[in-house]
Structures are given as structure tokens and as C-alpha cells.
Image (cartoon, rainbow, N blue to C red):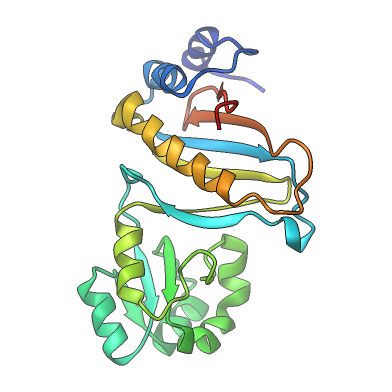
Length: 229
């Protein structure tokens, strides 16, 4: 795979087989980020579980102490008082069947997170094929199916991220922007890793965290030391 000169220069500063402590690792990421935009820093955590088994799923959500650096656009399925409360809490879009039809007919996806009150799940269920593959289907585990839609909207706006295993048993999750600097990125990293460790399934055997790599959008990966976790 061909990599540009900036990437290669950045990669030279990172020792491939070294596992860096968080502060040093994020320091390197911030130093080597060379794009003209504020790159997102993402964490890739490989777990020693088998996501094919229901009792080894790892999924949840956490509000990062310093947010993600991006304001998520929230679509809420609710009616009556709950719809009003969602609007007051800052939801970008609120609706019922009208939103279902907009997504189905117009292929509209101008939102990052979907929140629904439990009584609306019958309606939202019709969007399973559209929302599911994009990872947008609301779920009680992620706190996005809830009677308190206003609270859910506020948490998302405050920098709540959802983490879940993909088919290869890896969690990919943004933890901020390069402009945050090493200190804030470390705080977010510790919060997310703490949540993943707490979410360890009882059925998981052997080494739980196999590897952890952090990288900015355009930069090389940095291996993180997770021994202390």
C-alpha cells in the first residue's frame, strides 16, 4: 500500500514494537498529525472474546470527559410531551412516521445518532434494514431507547460515544481531536478503556485486551500500553 511522504515521515518517529504510555503515545500522535484539518483520533481495541456468542458481546456507551470535538446530529422518534422535551434538549430532528417515510423515500441520513422512546420502537423497527447496517439502530444497551429522551439527547450532545465489537472482535471508537492535546486525549482514553474493561463479559477467558492502537485520521497507528488497565 502506497503511503505519502508525510505519513512515512510520521511513521519513522514511532517505534513499531513499542507500547507507549497514554501521555507519550498521544503526544506522538499530536506531533505527527500533519493534515490541514483537525484530525479525529480514533482508538482500535482488539479483545480476546468471540463476538459470535451472545454471552461475549461487548457494547455500551459513555460520555467522554472532554467530549469528541464534534457535535453529533440527533434524530429523535417521540410524540407529545416527549417530542417537546427532545426539542428543548437540543435534538436536531424530532418526528414519528414522517421521519420514517423521509428515510425510506428520500434515503435521508443527515444525522449521527438516533434516539427513540420505547413506545416508538414499533415505528422505528420498520427502519431496521436502513439503520442496522449503518450502526444507527437505537438500543437500550446504548441508552438510545429510553423514556427520558431529553436526557439521552443532552448526553449525546455532551460527547457520548457508543462502543461495540465488530465481526473481527475489534472496537473502533473516536476519542477526540488532535487539537485536544495529549492531556485531554489521555483523559478520554482512560474513560473509554475503563468502560470497556468494566464491560468484560463473564464468559470471556484468557487475555481480555489483546491490543490497543490509537491513530489520527491521516496518521500512523501508535500501540498503547494497556498493562495498567
